[in-house]
Length: 182
Image (tube, helix red, strand yellow):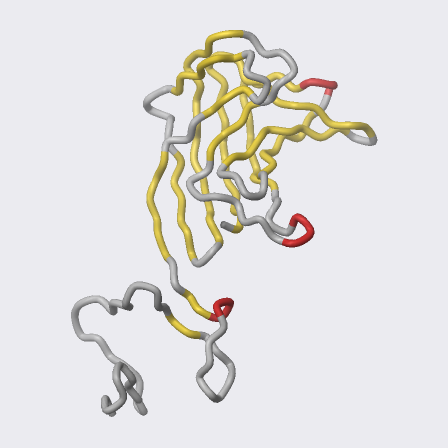
């Protein structure tokens, strides 16, 4: 029945034999559980994207003024499903200018981290490293996201003590995998 403007009732499902299902801009797939068909924003699947991006790396204290990535290992893959963004890949630093002081390595993300109540948007992204120095005799590196920004910074943990920060050297390698809410 197509009598209502834009409304359709399907009693036996929908079958596409060829082509794509296209949803108008500003709309999505409703997972509303109410019988009146009212959909809240939290019940609407309205975004999917995948691709790759080249992150920018910086020193949080500004002592390292430029960081050059190896062109064969300079991008991360991402998939965005709804608000959940997953990233993964390998980043290798070729060189940098300056020297590390009190700052840590910062890396950009493909989308802004959600700014939610009680720091619910803040999370960690897993990372394995090679040729990265950790301060305070710490180990167990991770990237910590910052709500309301499109960046994350390297931190390291230490058993029963305050953690430290990660400072990469030339030829440093980062093996990155994790997800966050945009």
